[in-house]
Image (cartoon, rainbow, N blue to C red; front, side, top):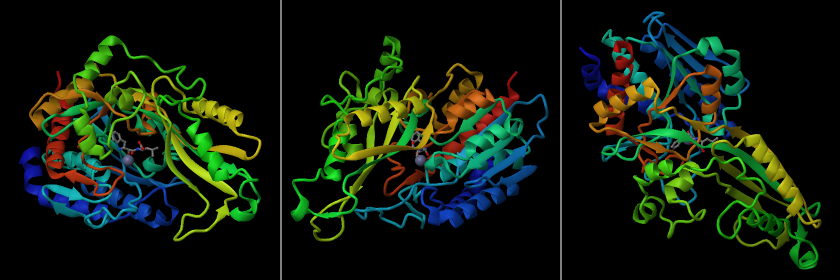
Length: 456
Ligand code: BES
Ligand code: ZN
């Protein structure tokens, strides 16, 4: 049986396995889910063992364990491919009750598998694992393969940084393959060629030492919730540009050629409305929508709390208010430098009637893919085989915090072999993975690995 026939023959079984993994609510941002993270890691370890890797290990870290596996039987002259994925997922909270089926009870509807983590990233990681399994089962894996599957991607990969640093030899590879991004459509295959960096922060504004009656004190105390929104409002200029001095200083401007390339695949206002449900696009003037999301930095409020938000009213002046914020960064911005600029600006604009502070939560570098590497060329042919059309290159606005760091430390080119679709709803309600993407993704990954070993 060749590897493609193997996939065909085992599709049902693969899907059942994916469902099993998806039932584990491995949410890395919520500490009460620690046991689920351990279960999900252990599941991945067993999975790697069962497909026939020769060395499989669970590395404990100060955070969630790193799952490692390798098969190096192709020998010293064959290339080594390091495949990265993550077993942690985002929370599935649903304030407006929009999940049609429960987030951790995977369900198949109209050709899609619905569950938190379906596309991001258990489904995509398993796509790679199953491609390797099929090649191994067929006795046709021509390259060495290593897996690193982490459990903290959605919370900044804090403990993966030291792990990578301490295991450079173990992780040494010729190319880094990641299935944790998306493409434009089943009939519009594309390969992501850049990711944005990120710096996440928590702002706090404090006023009185305790909540006050707003009747007794309202009018003579600067309300911290009000001060916080005033500060937040000052972070953007009216035209949509970030107002923090120096914020854009290091941003590399796009060349005419780059802009023309990006313009070939515009996001229409219609598609924008359909995907987001928002009434109108918004953003930095003089940049198209896809330039804004793929190539420009942002300052985004992710959440804001303070005072009474429960049922009914409570007339208080809160003692403090908090905002969670993250900035998406692009080449050549440095997350720590940007954090310091923000910290300085915050101090400047905070009125003396309140106090303020900002704390860095986590950070990640942007990363750029070398589209000329022989591995990217192989990926282009693999997508062509798997999806029946030559893929186009696209810039992506999301982040995979460890990627830039791994690329640099391992000195290896990266291939972002993403199989997600624009309507997969990652991080939102009704996250899904399209079954066709699963099947075609395996085909693509098999072709890719196979072609690396059989080249000249
Ligand atoms: N898979 C995503 C990143 C992504 C999404 C890349 C869509 C390209 C297209 C990843 O798991 C993710 O969501 N990362 C977080 C990282 C953050 C929490 C540090 C992100 O981008 O918000
Ligand atoms: Zn994610």
